Image (tube, rainbow, N blue to C red; front, top):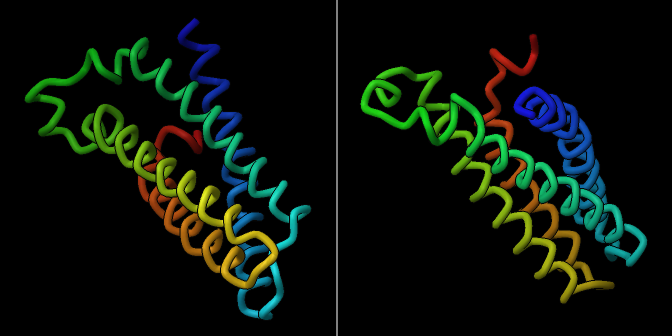
Length: 143
């Protein structure tokens, strides 16, 4: 079970990151070229939102079943930078990133068909993407 969750979490990360990068780039192009953010473009933002939320659910399941997650919280883990990354920094930073992305989607949807929608999606999704990228355990993920 653990290996399936870990593999799924790692593989879906590529999909979620790609979707978020596409959303940020599309929103940036629309915002800087002063174009409105259309409903069809917003479907891609929805896909990014859904992929990120599924990734979060898999991550939470992994967090509670992994030996590097909840069961690893101790004073010794806090002294080890990689253990702290896996047990504390990665999950909580990504939860905050997902909250920001969700807020961006919600606010952007209210401003649909206006210049503000692209700006909102660009800023919120961009901040969320930066947070996610900052806390990926690259040492483990790229092996």
